[in-house]
Image 1 (cartoon, rainbow, N blue to C red):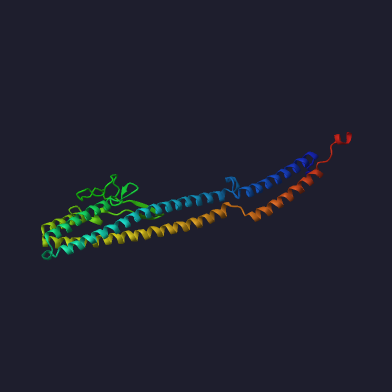
Image 2 (cartoon, one colour):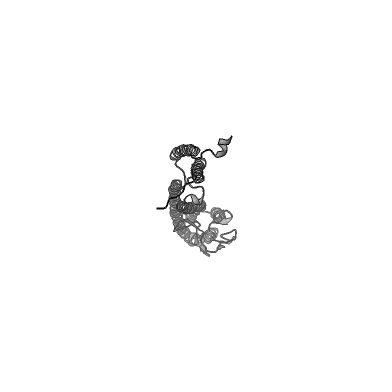
Length: 296
């Protein structure tokens, strides 16, 4: 049986190593209390560090979805308010057409006055159809230009779609298609208003009736555009709510992984302090006086 010789130097080294280990453990707990974090460097817990990184990545995605949703809500809010104003104007033009339909009871001067107001409505609707959000026409698709419709009422957009991703698999259109909303070139709200004005000035009863029917169809089309915008608005706000809920859940998960339990850490620090003091006392007894101490 082999016998290991334990020297005074070995005892001293082991005692000092034990004291240093206790000091390191106490310093680690103190750092956790100071930072409030259980993980201050990857080596503290490689597995939890990986989990924290994945949670942070998911949090970043959700925050981006929330920002996208906020931008989308602003786009759709602009579209909604614009459509509401346009519907009001076109409804007024339709009413003027109905008044002008009574050609037998209205003088030409009265018809001209109605036509003038219809012209003003056309200008107002055209101006609203070119409404912009952040310098981009909300009915112009993805065009780089500043207009969705030219002065003559023809479409100047490109037919593209402005999309916003508001979830992992959720993408919502936040603009409105100019052609679908107002009609194709030559057969849209603007041409119908111009035709109605012309018919009123000419006292053309048949033309006025056609104008009334066309504007009625335009109002139906505009109402459909409003309904579509409202549905997309609801969808994007719901997605934003879900993203906010995910942020709360992920933040809680990240806290569970990274943050320190202050009460437990405080108790642990006290335990480590007691252990460190005990190690110091034991080391003081282990390291015996040297021969030099006896020669003094």
